[in-house]
Image 1 (cartoon, each protein chain N blue to C red):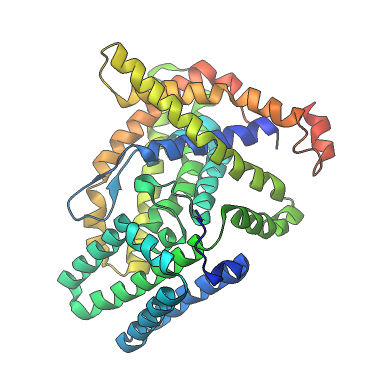
Image 2 (image 1 turned 180 degrees about the horizontal axis):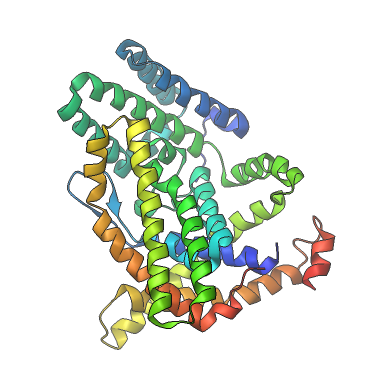
Length: 207
Length: 186
């Protein structure tokens, strides 16, 4: 999720950034040379510190991910030696940093637009509706706080009655309560005509 | 697709995200946290069926790619797809599909009771196996662990995931029996 970073990388089109990330991920796995990987990692780090310091901070904040990489590297060092572990560390470390840069310099709106545009070929093939994909993403973002609230309410209800917190008694009411609201939300979407422009004939089917 | 199906898929993705917000537990140095998120994926398959469940999982994967911190432990962003455990995330999609496909057949045939539960449990266990196959395959091919190491690291999570399969089957049956007719995907 983007907070303004002031980085010039924000001006680069998201599609270009994604293509760059993809090619870097392929290139890093083509070579096993420590010199090449080391210089790649160094270049990326220096460029990040120069142009997008915020991304480095976010990268360090994502410590569970870095811990995962470190754990696998340790295991590799123990089994296959330090050389292999270093190669793995440089590859995954560089990649996760580049991926973080792309993520923090691109807003959710830009991402949704890019995803919607990338989905247009799917729409032409008749597999999916590009606009529905954008709508679905927006709906999830809107629903997460609601579902979380519902979960906390169920937890409170358990506490108020002195019931132990069991996964089954917590999750069933949350799922049912959430899914019960589906009809109302679907009606609201149809009433506002949000999906009418793209598929008028579908609206007739729904009616 | 009807608006209601779209909403159900989005709602279930939201449920999966919220289940991930329950704090995960890291087991020693094994790089996979134990969390309730995969439970949500199994339930999506059971409740919404193959197509709806798979679309729900796909939506989750797209949200991760967009960079939202929707995975357990607040993870998100493209970096996740390049991490050692990416196989488990990508595996959610075939997991939801396989669990859904099997439960659709069970829900239609068995008339409730322990037979339905056994069928849903089998569907969820197959789902768990699919996730682990993808996770281990990724550890071997992409991260470069030896098959033995990858399997040893993976097996520690199997008991926990089997418990989750049991919970998913129980809750799934409860939801299907009480709300099944209202949740049918169109």
